[in-house]
Amino acid sequence: MIFKFLPGVYLGWGLGANDSANVFGPQAYSGIISYRGAAIFTAIFVLFGALVEGEKCFAQIGEMATFESSSVAFLSALSAGIMIHLMSYLKLPVSTSHAIVGSLVGVAIFHKNPIDTSRLIKSVICWIITPVGAVIFSFILFFILRAIFSNIKNVIVYNAIIKFLSIGIGCYGAYSLGANNLANVVGVYVGAGMLSPFTAKLLGGIAISIGVLTYSRNVMETVGKGIAVLDPFSALTAILSGAIILHIFAEIGVPVSSSQAIVGAVFGVGLIRGAKTISYRKLIQIFSGWIFTLFGTVLFGYVFSYIISVIK
Amino acid sequence: MFGRKKEKEVKNLIFEHLRKVEEAILKMKEAMELYIKGDYERAKEISYQVHLLEGDADSKRREIIEKLHQGAFLPTIRQDIIKLIARQDKIADRSESCCDFCISQRPEVPEEFKERFIKLLEVSVSTFSPYKEALENMFIDYKIVKEKIHSVNTVEEDADTLEWRLTKEIFSSNLTLAHKMHLREYIFHIVSVSDIIEDAADALDIIIVKQKF
Image (cartoon, rainbow over all chains, first blue to last red; front, side, top):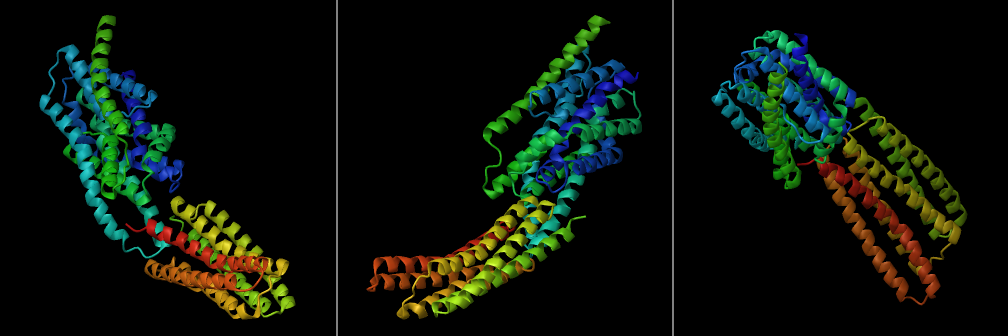
């Protein structure tokens, strides 16, 4: 039985390793906080977010497909986990939200199970809204934060405020990440009735935290470097915008991609400042990565279901 | 938690560095005035004090860099502070160079130019006063910093104008070309002080601009 949860734990580990960079990458890369400190804060607040609000997105994943057997949940988590690993290996941007939904659809197609299309459409719409919403939020927050920062009178106060906000916003981002993305990791198990919501929150939250603590440094460096081309103020605006979007979708109950949120926010800040923050090549690469993840996991879900049915 | 203590230590060190640089530039002025007036021995003595003060300023600069690398200030500001201090330190370097030039090469300032050399020296050195106020206010109020940086630029322009006029007059005189060139080099050493003060003010301005949106 425990074996069936391993893909979920693996998925959680991958999520923690990959996505913590979206909330603490720039702060760690630019030296505001050490990598170790960033990882510890992220792990604590991801777990906190997962335990407090993680349950809100369970229905979106758990009720999207019909889980007539535990193997549907297992196969969905497995194909999503493998896709995350493959994409990470290829150093391509990846979204666990896309991966788990694609896997659910693939597994359901093979088993000829019905898919709750209204939930599927809701997810797709939210995925589209995520980067657009992040652009809008980065616009709004930029002007609010600028008004606050324009009253700063000297370098020591500026320094202290940036440090305080960097850590505070990073913790809030980690909380939102845990609240929003937990369902990607364990939602299928709750849907299949294999785990109680509380056990799922604990298992998923710990899996994500372990991913953060054991393997997030490299991605933090890569993502942090990409975002840190912005000045500290703009980077903070972008991270806060991304965190708010994640939190809003956690309240709505739809898991979305933290990478999409941060990319949209960075793009938005760049638009305001008249600076080119993301190249079109990078945008195309990110977009194709998401499409590839979605359709790749549909295929994986289908193929793995076929293989298991042959073995059985 | 947010490292205010380290920042205050750096602030104090920057002020200590500033005081050493100020002493060096004022001693240089004193030495050069004595030199122009013909008191070579006393000028030599004070020039040696400038040399010692330059060394002290250099030690303070290294202390600041060390403290910054221990984690004071945000990394982005840290780099800009290092650049600022490097330029501020050069004010003492240039003061020392000016003294060295006189003591080692003894340019002969003709009687008719002495007053204008002293005036040029005064204006060049007076660029330091608004710079000092600007730097002190970096830790208090950016608005004053901006005003003082503007004053640095104004005084530096005055020094440039005096430099241009004096150079023109020297080259219109009946001195030998070698003598003219030697005096030109002396003028260059005097105004290089106000030039580097302006550069330091620019470095300070960059710090402020980066924090305004």
